[in-house]
Length: 233
Image 1: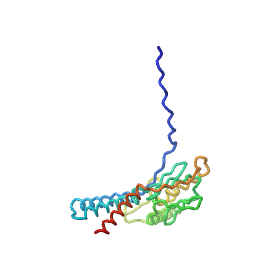
Image 2: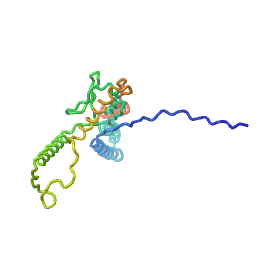
Image 3: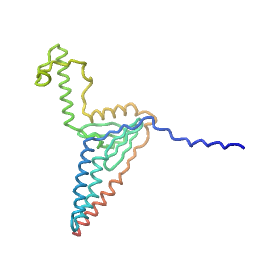
Image 4: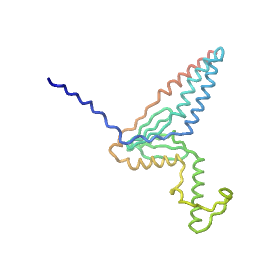
């Protein structure tokens, strides 16, 4: 009597060698959580304590507002790996293989430009002019300190630190390299990844765009219900 052999399990698809690098806006997430807490507080208060049409108006308003808050604060994200760039914006998900990316541009907003000429904004990587100015001031201070050290001069006393004076660095120098705003540094990293992977065979393909019906559907439904309630009021 022979013992039946156990069948080997079906081969599993290989796991991706590199995981996505995820970029999101911490400020947007914090603001979204705060807004959702306020909407929930006001909405549920109107639902359980309101009279007449007030609970229905509050419910319709919540169905309209909550998806929009989620769309513009919690949802945006940028996923990058060695094959493609995936952009999750409020109402769309755009997937661009690196071979289809023409450039990544930073101005008053951060954008990726496809080779077809279409521009897509990176909602998850917003431009902060304040952060850029702060980084510029840090670069100017670092350049001034470096020039003084190069000339062998003592640093001027400053009204802080032990004894009210700053006698200069006592330990090893700080990190070298230009000081950049966080979102500008993210864009630099994406540009470097694009330059190194653009010609790779695995980074070719077509651009795909998918609309976020899971966000737009509830928001439209809430807007319709709210409009009907206001019209028949």
